[in-house]
Image 1 (cartoon, helix red, strand yellow):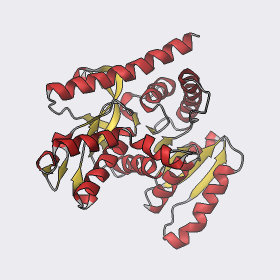
Image 2: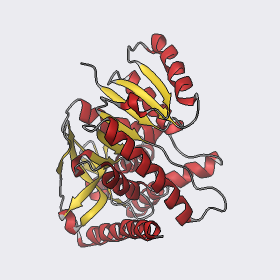
Image 3: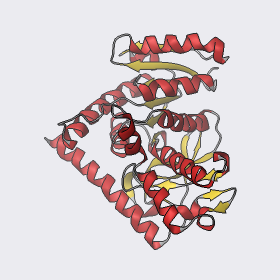
Length: 313
């Protein structure tokens, strides 16, 4: 039986994720959006590319009809709005919280056995909303950011050293934002720690560029944000689950005491397989690294507390 992936939100990230899933022949894809005609138009466009790209994945697009999500193995949620000029942080949080609550409830009703990959921002906070609204067990709700942030770190390392990105491995822990925690000690080139290949000054520059990687792209695009790499990150997670790869990837997972953190979604290394998050991998951190991770967790907790305050009105 063919696998099925639903992508909620047919904007740049969602449409690119749909394209990647189809072209890798991982599953059939249904695109869902609130905009009339847009998901159907993008799905049809992608289907017309299939003879050229040589895949037989089927893509469909619907407006607001979650019945089409039924039977999905994975649901990638990209729905939400970007912060607009004059919009407060609370306004953005309240709006996307409402969107995520609605989407998660609809998905849970249509595909109760699915696994949710959250891409919507603020990512760590939206994972909490999705977990609560869906009623799913914690292992079937996860956030994408760690794979994206680690990919950015890997790209910068490869560019700095003039080596293949395939030789690079990197770990970025913590929340998705300025408090993320890139770990140079666990970042390697062909197994060699980058601490042996680069000066402390250059490593710190790459770490800082990783932390501001999204903002750098926003600044260059002027109108919009990154979507190729975020889509690829979500699809790498989906592939690990669909193919039951047991792949270790950094993802936002719901911690229950690991790393001394309880009840929060934080980016940590996890094993991804057919059941979703099958194991949370605890790695040994230095005192400085642990302090940075706890600071990142505190920032996520601040967002969660803000959402509780907004819900109370």
